[in-house]
Every structure is written in structure tokens, then in C-alpha cells.
Picture 1 (cartoon, rainbow, N blue to C red):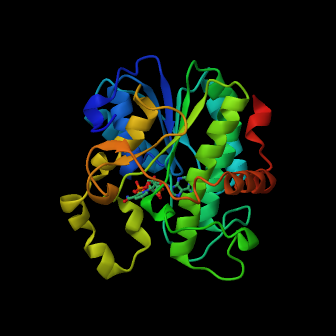
Picture 2: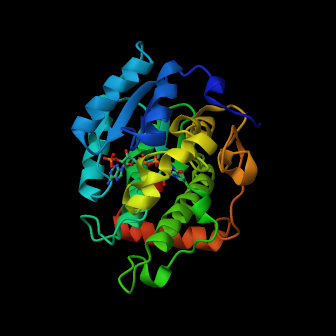
Length: 304
Ligand SMILES: NC(=O)c1ccc[n+]([C@@H]2O[C@H](COP(=O)([O-])OP(=O)(O)OC[C@H]3O[C@@H](n4cnc5c(N)ncnc54)[C@H](OP(=O)(O)O)[C@@H]3O)[C@@H](O)[C@H]2O)c1
């Protein structure tokens, strides 16, 4: 169960996938390889123009691709609910949901609902999206929800006393919080799905370090070094391999966490990844779940 690359994606004909933040970066390549394997792919993009441009590039990569754009902004709960409603109108089932979109270390900001931007987009938006889409996922025979976390979760904590960073903002600590939240959510969701007898499974993945637009909020001199990342670590395409493994490999199961297998999980083909003690703490998982239900007003399991 190691050494997975895009070449190992099994036949996906008949399956439908939504990848959030698929107009660029890892999400784009995740969408490309799912489409090349035969899946019908929906490119989640907050910008309709960027989504259309990505659809055209995806068709350059795989001319026979069956793909479309779903306009989806995760920084507004109303927009998330609206996008999920549109998806429900056009699809009978959803086999793969890749919660990939993310923002890293921006200046302090809030979503439309007043959530700190990184927690709001990276975790709470995806929490609500997954909840709204669970009936569609449950309509597929063996759907998977894949959330994209990060090595950055390892030293992170959930600031339960100040979830929205109203008492002080550290961009790095809040990015770590949001990526830890992705893992806590995955493990809690998978356990709850199993307890409810649902066929849907939740998995997580991380890309190691990959060259994408994620460093857009870094200072100019640091951004200049970004091209080096693709040379020595992962290209954006290689960074999609763990997500592809989590979404499609018959060798993985709900609750698994996949990442690159070379030096400190930073690059290379995908396999099982390691997660921190906090990520595996069931009390923290439950506490974050309850806070997320309260903040979003979405109780995912109540919908299936
Ligand atoms: N690259 C790495 O080394 C690395 C390492 C660990 C984890 N990750 C994780 O991998 C995931 C993908 O990141 P990436 O590296 O591919 O970065 P990226 O190239 O910056 O792509 C991020 C995607 O998320 C979208 N997005 C941002 N805010 C959004 C919002 N409010 N609503 C909907 N979509 C939004 C972006 O859309 P726009 O283009 O419109 O902004 C873009 O499509 C993220 O979750 C990130 O935390 C990446």
C-alpha cells in the first residue's frame, strides 16, 4: 500500500467527483487525473472565469474528459449551501468529494460569517459543504470524502477559547489550526459514518511540500524561492498523488491518512502518513465537531 502515483488510479468510469479549489495547484491535477481515469469531474472554483480557464486546460490534458465547473466560494456559508443545492439539482449521486481548497497565512481577515479566514475557508466551509452533500454522497455505492491536511498540523493546536483569533492573530498558528481541524474532522466524520451504518468513508491526505500558488501571501523574497520547491520536492502534479490515492485506491479505507513517502513525508509517491497525538485525540475531535455544528448550523449526520 505504498508507492502510489497518478498511474495507479483505477478505472473511474461511472463515478462523479467534486474537487474544491480545482482551478489551480493540487486540486487542478487531482481533477485532471480523476477525469483521465474516466470520472465525471466538477471543478470547484470560487471564480467562474478561473474555473472556465481551468476546464479548458483540463481538456488539453485529457481531451475525452467529462468535466464541468461548479462555482463555489467557501468563505460564505450561504454560498456553500447554494453551490451544494446546484450540485444536487444536476447530479443524482456524488462518489468523490475532495475538500482541497485552502488559503495559507493571509493577513488577518474574516469570512462573510465572521470566521477567521483560514479556519472559515479551510475547515468550516468544507464542514458545511460535506454536511450539505452527504445525502448525495450516501446515494453512491461507496463514496469517499477526502480532506487535504498538511505536515503543518503536527505542532498545531485548536484554540477553543479563541477560535476566531479575536484576541490575537498568528498567521502560521492559525494555518496549523485549520489543517489540524481537517484531520480531526476526517477522523470524527469517519467514526460517525460507520456508527450510522453509512457506506460513505472519510479519509485525509497531504501533499508534502509542493510547488503551487499557496505561497501567494508570503513576502516577495520568499516567493522568489518557490520555483525551487518543484525542483527538489514536489511539483503540483506530484502533490496530487496522496489525494488521488485517498480518493480511489482499493487498498485504503476510511480513517486512513495518506501522504508522500520520501524524506519526512515531504515528497515522492504516496503511502500511509503519520498524524499527531492531538489529531488522534477523540475528545478534541468531538469538541471540534460540536463547535463546528454550532458555528455553521449544519449537523452533517442529521441529513442521512
Ligand atoms: N502546496 C503545498 O505544499 C501544500 C502543503 C500542505 C497542504 N497543502 C494544502 O493543499 C490544498 C491545496 O493548496 P495548493 O497548494 O494547491 O494551493 P493553491 O495553488 O493556492 O490552490 C488553492 C485553491 O484553493 C482555492 N480557494 C482559496 N480560497 C477559496 C475560497 N474562499 N473558496 C473556494 N476556493 C478557495 C483557490 O482559489 P483561487 O485561485 O481563486 O484563490 C485555489 O483554487 C490546501 O488545502 C493546502 O492547505 C498544500
